[in-house]
Length: 330
Ligand code: ATP
Ligand code: MG
View 1 (cartoon, rainbow, N blue to C red):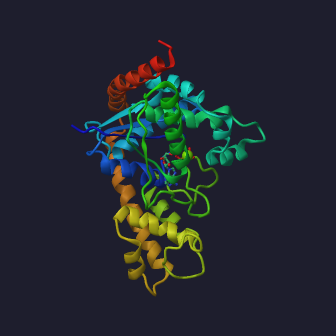
View 2: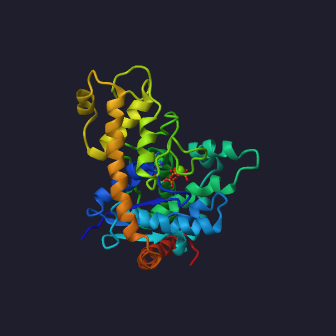
View 3: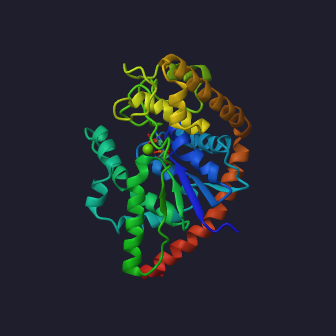
């Protein structure tokens, strides 16, 4: 029997991107057989910023269908919607009270995202959502959480809060490991390779590859990705962030090392290199999109989410009971 638990989740705050796939979902899919696996749709995290309710419902279905299209099997992995398992909210509330204001203020995601909101006032959700994430992870006695590099700090907070709670109230939570893959952990915006690719990116989205993008449009986005004038296919994130980003994308999809890519492109121009990346990304999207059509069936998705929530709730309620008992609440 598989004993260790793996868990991850994505906010249904827009269409999934190549960054979400390479940074989180692919790492999960590749390990799905080795762990007791849980993947969830983080809809409570989505409402930490205002959402259109109808669009949110659709985004949840899109997200589940996309998980399946990316290779997640409900026969191997428990797939569920966060808000269906009420324990997330309760443990999130409890974990918020184990946290210092300073700890949450130091989160770089908060600092960065609150800048964009500061005129209209910063949402409290943006401030406290890391403690909900702590609860998401601890509820399932999780050992590994495949996430992108942007989530590293939140993972460290998870370990800190679990440890603090265990010390104060007795051993209650398992401390998870941070798993951040060495390649593809921060896919950058193709037009601004100093910024992460985000699914909630606004504007014309020329720098963001969505998994549902028309394949020809996605290829064009790669061909017009910002590079540099050094004219050498070489992995150097500081001086050649655009080229290094394309190398990460290629290497993460095909498994080829940076060294081998550099050797193949010695003395060759960026045009040829970009064509190969565009081809590889185009083929990946074609495969994913063909599978997506098969799974885009609300009845099927509702059944998967119902079954998943029933299974997840059993484990989550046991953990919550342990925590409330430790606190003297029951
Ligand atoms: P949003 O703009 O709504 O925050 P997002 O693209 O950052 O969207 P999240 O739902 O916040 O997506 O994150 C889902 C998972 O995808 C997390 O594990 C996160 O670390 C990972 N991830 C997100 N963007 C990237 C990226 N550009 N490169 C690698 N991993 C990423
Ligand atoms: Mg994000």
